[in-house]
Length: 175
Image 1 (cartoon, rainbow, N blue to C red):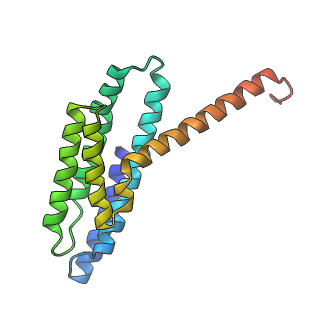
Image 2: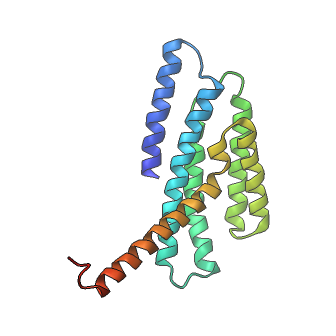
């Protein structure tokens, strides 16, 4: 989450300096762009953590998956929500955004109590739908993007491992 936090801090700083220099609050478009950058960075980082978990857990079972969800995934998603709350809201949208983030935090509490359950999936989907309704496309697909990022990283790791294996079998490829 360190990379995402640094990106978020820079983005929030730029957003604040732009708003302060104009003497007004940020626009909804600025807010959405900033929030989506935070969510995209978070999804990429969570995807990396997920692919690392999958590589390390050779005997993955429900118990280890629940631990990962509770102590890695939820921790990072909560940190993302906390970062999003630091972005100044456009005029008149603070209450709506606060309730949206509270809904997402509630969905994470459900996910914590039932890491692999359908009720957690439904609650999270409903909360992410609110992000989409507001225009925050990257935030609305944060969970799915993290999974895609993990799949991409795992595929790349498999390809690299296969290439390394092929090189080790072919003495001329070692060069």
